[in-house]
Amino acid sequence: MLLFGAGTAQTPTVARADVPELAWCTSDAGLAIGSAGSSVACLQFTLAALGLYHSTLTQKYDKHTAEAMAIFQSNNPPLRVDGVATPLALTQMGIYSGVDAQPPPLCLADARLGAGSSGPSVTCLQDKLTKAGYLHVASTGKFDKNTSDAVRAFQVATPPLPTDAVAGPSTLAAMGIWSGKTIVQGGQVPTVAAGGPWPAGREPYPNWNLTADGIPYYGNHVACTAANANIIASEFAKDGADDATQQWATYIASREGGCNYASVNINPATRDDSHCTFQLNALAGMFEPHGELGRRGWTTDSVKQSMQNCADAASDLWVYCGKGPWTPPYACAPPWAGDLGFGDA
Image 1 (cartoon, rainbow, N blue to C red):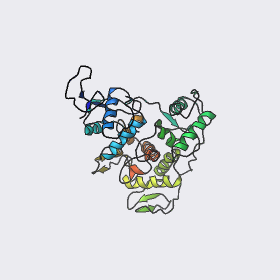
Image 2 (cartoon, one colour):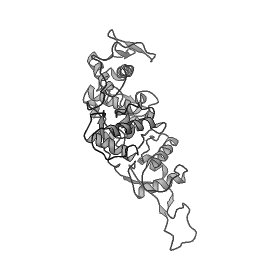
Image 3 (tube, rainbow, N blue to C red):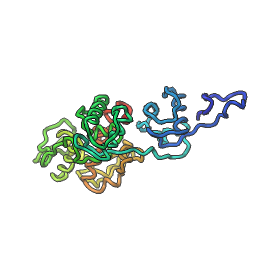
């Protein structure tokens, strides 16, 4: 633990009336970008004492605080690297108060947003762009040229996002406001091939096999039916995946449970109980209360409802993490976040 007060972590040798009494500094868990108050000040103070935080004690959980927190997490495995003050991370710092606070509420936006889009999702997008310094006019709820230019500027500054001025799943995810839902609303909607992207070609993945119809499957595992393979391909296509990724996802579905959404896969190293053909994993922290999908209502139970729900959730994770959640080392760091594992805010 650290002592907090009077700008120092050293216990004074002489008590003085004009110096505040030093006390143990504690911080509530659940702090994330948008949080504020004494718990944030304690966390910032602690991170500064560890040489990770180099700004002033603002008591506001901003990008600099999240970056410092993520560095601490990356230096202390097996902590999940997400820039959020989790109970485990605070316990390791010695400042956990034992209180789990809720992260600040976020507005959420459905994809895809482009020319012609309007409504609450666009307002959320505009508010986020304004807060980030990319949009300098009032939010209107209508996707106009100012919004398009601001989205493109954000994408240019956040590689490897596509610079198409359309707020698709990956762009909204990088902003931290994606609802996890893809709808046909404005912008150019990806074309989903009728019947799926079959036949697939030969790929250099381990035990890659093809059915007579060209649907990939793993080794001697059960291949997806054409109907389930088409569902998987369609959900990934809606979130911007190319044909090769749609085919790969179908191969992974076969590997993880024969395209049976109700199959249970146990990973003994991570104690992951997937309940889904894609091994939709708590091991990446995505379904925890503060995980990217957990905040949006996904649970390991909800993915058991149907193959479409399972494929939709799998595609959500693909947008955030690339192929990471379904292949070793079972870690999740969005490609636009470098090594930090959380989106810009």
